[in-house]
Length: 149
Image (cartoon, rainbow, N blue to C red):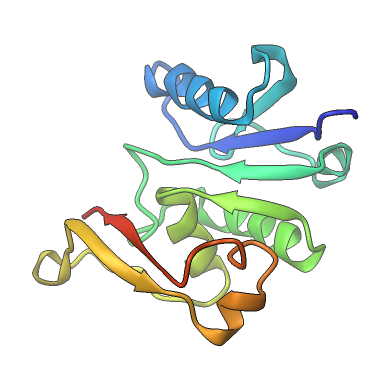
């Protein structure tokens, strides 16, 4: 069986050592060879929407230097890509910064609020919708999730 073609979408400054580290971590979890996981930078690269069609699934990674809450000149361009993925039913995993980006691009609110920051482990329960969701249905009825501020 042919492996799915994934694209890792990053948001990193040019010399950020996490560029390679993040790619290696996702590649390891996917059990892919290094050259089987492509990556582009959402902020630094010019991403052509039509070229996204060659991928089966997308990963939107983290970022140490760019804030979804405060945005920047890059924000509209990046939201356009996220909305394309959503509107075209593209399989997408959004991690950390990527999840915040997806939430805000789809109309959610992302805030920097130290008084509401959470750090630790939280017990989560599947809702009735979660029990039939194609991603979450294989999880136990309750499980623990790591929180990060």
